[in-house]
Picture 1 (cartoon, rainbow, N blue to C red):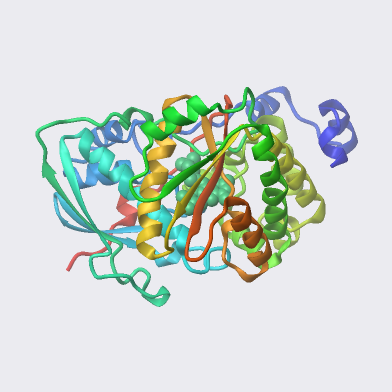
Picture 2 (tube, protein in one colour):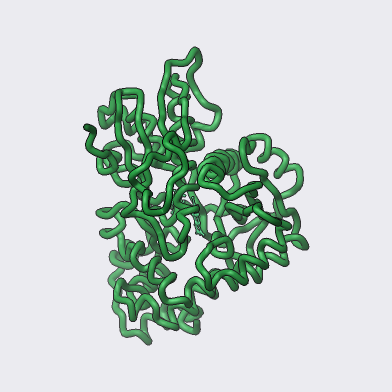
Length: 396
Ligand SMILES: Cc1cc2nc3c(=O)[nH]c(=O)nc-3n(C[C@H](O)[C@H](O)[C@H](O)COP(=O)(O)O)c2cc1C
């Protein structure tokens, strides 16, 4: 904690680190890589053209994989049935069984993919007919074996989707937010642009209403990050430097947490590392939590998505609502960051989850599927995606 407040010069002197000017400049520059691999990696349809991806279903998939998804594990695999048809499955090697025991969040991440795919298809002049769970709901052990959705594209009379232009700028933003609280009028605009088709969207407006959520967000993150097995799941998906981020092209990282330049370099060099003792180090954790509190305290508005039941279908359809809303948030120039910890179903979280249910007024079978903070930030970072070819299943 003390280290964080040291001036750069003092820190360099005390730590005995000698940085040459060019090296220092390198670490201060925000590594801003495009999201997709290959040529023209920012706009997914431009990327398809540059990479000579011709089949409509593949073009739509290339848009779909830019979707928000838990820990950026990209738990998607595709069986291509024809140039316009595919089956979507969860990639069972990329789920988060410790923090997401029912695979609820992973299925929300299937819905986000489908919504982006649909928008991409519209943009190139196709309607996407999406059949959710074509073989019905499945058990945890059947994840990856039974399909999440069957998609069929058909030529449409029109071309384009109003939200497509925001696909390339959409990103989860975990920086400290600035500016004013989101107003009722702004929320009304967001609800119109990012209208929910399945779940119910609730908004928390103004400083006073936000206040009771803050302690809960913090306590839930503290619990997740100090419980060894849940925190260790994040270690597995953490990418510790640019080289690892760019070669694995998945997972979470410091720049995605809103850390850039010298502070990022300092954290990666002195506090973070793939070794369990380093990752779970108490000092590093204290710094992380104190920064997390700053982020929570900078919340300018809260949104949550609620469903009447809590089925696999609810999860997937809420994911579609969530992705559309995130594009709407991008369209109005705001930023968004989920706080999923208190929603999670591992037993240590039971108490915090009950508190959140009380605060949000859910009862019986109802479930809060997602909860996010909103605000303004100039921070820019795009998490990479693997090439869609690495997500293709064998067809036969
Ligand atoms: C179901 C779900 C839960 C998520 N929960 C969190 C969360 O608790 N904290 C967080 O920082 N990001 C969370 N995210 C955001 C993802 O980490 C993010 O979408 C992913 O890393 C890809 O980055 P991008 O959204 O910038 O493309 C969640 C996303 C989804 C779809």
